Amino acid sequence: MIHNLKVQSDLGNIAMKQFLTVIVAYSFLSSGLHHLWFAARDLESGSWNHFVAIFFGDVVGSILFAAVIKYGIDLLKGKLGRDNLIK
Image (cartoon, rainbow, N blue to C red; front, side):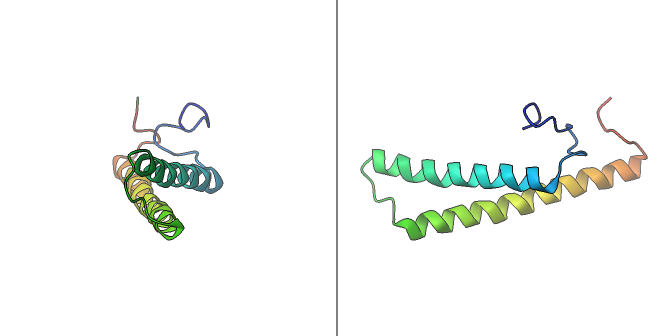
């Protein structure tokens, strides 16, 4: 994400649309590959309801996790009085 979308390492220039696009793509791949793995191993992978539950769980969890990290970095930058943490 940092290389392809030209996002700074401290996430300072990421737009909300980019942020959500990456999260939705990750969530779709995560839940899809989860079901593919179970199908390839001849295990019960569940129905579409399970896919949707995993997808939305990944979306919400990723948003919460990334938001905590982003705001934590912003808070740390504010306390240190620096524009960029990496120098």
